[in-house]
Image 1 (cartoon, rainbow, N blue to C red):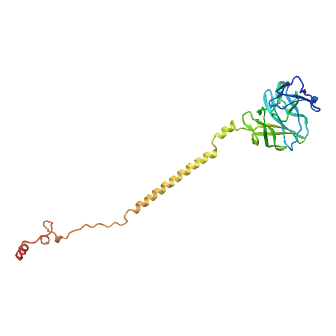
Image 2 (image 1 turned 180 degrees about the vertical axis):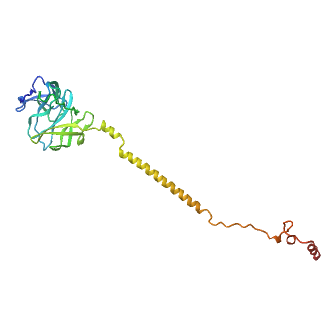
Image 3 (image 1 turned 30 degrees about the vertical axis):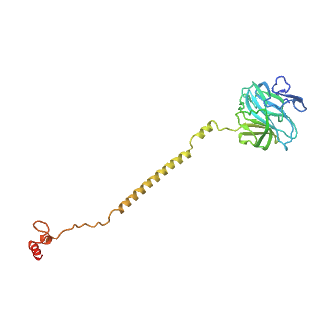
Amino acid sequence: MSNGYNYADDNDPGVAYAGSWTQITKTGPYANSLHQTTQSGAGATIHFTGNLGRVFGSVPACDPSVHQEFVIVAIFLDDVSVAQVMQPCGTAARDNVMFYDSGTLSGGNQPHKLSAVNQLANCLPFQFSAFSWGVDSATAATATRIVAAPIYSIPPTTGVLSIIAIQGSSGSINRSMRGSSTISSGTSLAADSSPSSSSVQFVTVNGIVTSMVIAPAATGSGDNQGRSLSPSTGLIVGCIMGVLLFVILLILLLNFCRRRRNRLHATTQPSNADAITPFRLTESANNPSTGFPSRSRCCPTTSQILSFHTRR
């Protein structure tokens, strides 16, 4: 393995290990040697000067038809998380697998720190093989450094972690693997977790999936939250139309009440009122001098009184 890159295998004194590691000898990997670990958080680190870096390792064999398993490794560049890599196992072991390639970094020939950290406990071991680095002078002046992405912090626990419908351009996986994990923000990746919590990029070689890079999905913070808090145009227009409709209905109701009141008032008025004729006494019944009724009609005369007493 040359191609103009500098290599440091797993036994190089420049490689610093953290956590529990075991050295194994195997034909196939770079320098026929590997360091492997099943401890979550165990990592290998190297300091180099260049403008790109790579991480190589091996993936053990398994039986995917029975239980699909993965090797999950977090990559840090200059103490910044840049990738979360998943390597699926297969019926045959794979050596010299490129877990990470930084691409050309900006700034040309600069000192960097590259680390690979195992993320699952008591599962498939992370078998580290070598670091490589170099300088591409033709593109170093115009290259852009890769964007850092958050990683998952996985405690050393056991259980079942389900990965459901991880889709990409090369197909999909609907399997589960051993292990239990949590994201550093506290969100649990438990059994039957939603695939919307992360996005997966497949890396293929000759049509065969060799690795997958996971990046957390958007959380709706920042500008998205600002847009969600602002009222929509449709809501404003709907409120205005509702107010106008209410005013129109109120005007129609008031007009109906006014017309009904006028009709009721008109029906209570008499259409043809009869004139009241006052009672008048006849002139012959009244005394023309006094205006009182005549005594001949009202009182007996003196002769009538005397005649009454005589008859008695």
